[in-house]
Length: 385
View (cartoon, one colour):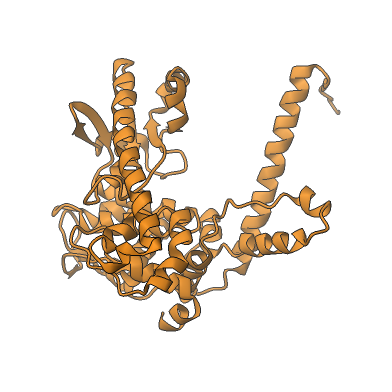
């Protein structure tokens, strides 16, 4: 990993700044004010600014211009955190009154693992509801006024996990938030969802790996690793690789001893421990490339503006295309691939093709619906004998 760190200077500084930032006693990072100034825009863009402020708050770096920017973001996120809690309570009260039991994933359920409110910025409330209640829950969200913009409703676990809803729901737990009951996943399911969600989005946000580290170090003593990893060996390996990255890049710690035993215990299975020590050769460099430029996989350059431009927009499009193709983590997850040492390029081209087909289908569907509404398109069924 040392060679990769030397190659990606910004990623190296981000790792130094964020290591241990989820802990209450995090020491100041060993970076210069110039290095902090260089990565501050990347930290702000990726949502990790407040975490770095938490580490430098008692250091001379806090007095720098970059430190002032990070402090401002921390104060804003802390204020937003109190607003989010109030919104969370109101939304859950509405759902409870309607007889619908949602499960909150990510968001506040991650932020509560950090030492102070506001350290982990989030925007929406990811709520999962039973399929039978999904239509009614959608109507309820639509009636929430402006607060509906902050609710991301999922039909059961949707793309978050493949577990059967009844099994998942039976393992949830209820937390009290100022007298309001909030249902959240168990620690095992929560950690697995965090790992796979972060990988599915290309592993581009370092704050997401801090979430995994925080969940890893705060897990209860009776944490069941076999339940967390699940029955699917491919997905279990994804989880193990994400945990391995949290350990290698950010110094996350795992309590317990390596153990061959199974069941409810705090010991670490051999397959997890070994996997964390033997990550695929391409994985760490791929993550460092993402962090070094902090470019979201959803970044877009409109092709029409490129075709009509004469001021070098082609360079932006070429940059976008290279960045869009350079998604080995996201591509492997999208095609349910294994994290081995085989080349990633087939996965990358396959995912790019699959993404293009999905985009074409979605656009055709929207065009078809608009045409039907306008009455300008009539399709007669044709029967061929």
